[in-house]
Length: 430
Image 1 (cartoon, rainbow, N blue to C red):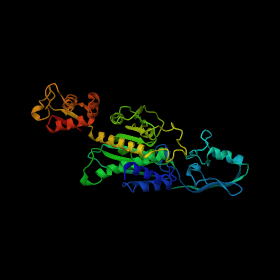
Image 2 (tube, rainbow, N blue to C red):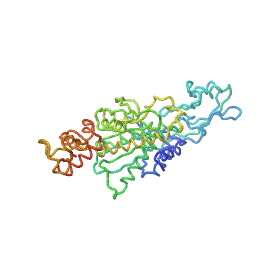
Image 3 (cartoon, helix red, strand yellow):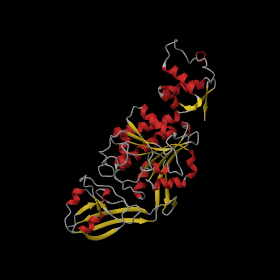
Image 4 (cartoon, one colour):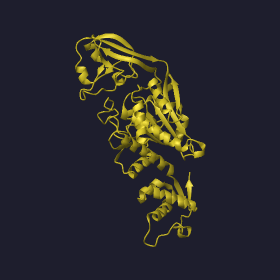
């Protein structure tokens, strides 16, 4: 099966699940991911202190609806799980329309769409509905039923780790807490699952060798999930050298890379470099303390080298956090393009190294080493790359720097460095 079809098929499978920051929808999602990779599923009990936060009660839903006096369901959670405000408390009561409207949410500017709303940390309840359906409601007695539970349980997240030749880590994180939204949630989950599977297929057993870096994939509920992982894994954070938070990968927008808080981390150089190399239209955004979980990884007490990679950023397209963010809003081709971009980022991270010229006083004689064959005045790109690598390998420039400065493709620069290493003209710096 082509990778775009694999990604899209996983999205279709996961789309109906009722995900929130806790609960069985998250567990069910992670169990499906486990069919692709040996995912570790972690449960963190309700009440666990995680920095300034506390793991909340676990929320699950059996049913929820609003019924008019004729027994007709005017809102039904089982038809669309966006109808119920996430973390709504149990309810069973009769309300007049004026009282009911205090708990109803719609989008007048998009009257056919259902909004997505939450009440994670305030005990409350509500329903979301299309505005044109809200306008059709008549004065009546409405039966409101929410069969939900808020009980001691746990927060659930998934983690997948591939050990590399060093302890230096590349971190990928995506959030898993939204119900029935394709771009904001499932595109990140599905692309990251297939990316993890790609690495597992390459390095998943001892006979296949190991990557240079270790790779860690996190599938966490937004905000509280990232905070929980960070609070419980502070001993691992010093190993992270590159990190990306990602979602919003399936729409038609250009790529947007948001820098880490540091602004000059290796990931802040690598991602724009690969985007440029692949001739993608993109924009680089400066760090702000608003967005996805990059704001947790980049909080001042941690300040990790973690950026964010999306297409159209969160909140900047009308379909965001609505029922219009459905499987028709995204395309398999855009998902595949995003997957291939991440593969390119990994390959560049793996190949990008620093070297030291072992013969720095003037150019070494390359001809006697079989590396320089051009007729004088007719230098080829590869042989020019040899000169660039030798000249810039003073321990401060990596291969991406040399490619940027020379204008020579990264693959040619990397090949030149490898050949120079093989004839003992370079020393790799660890």
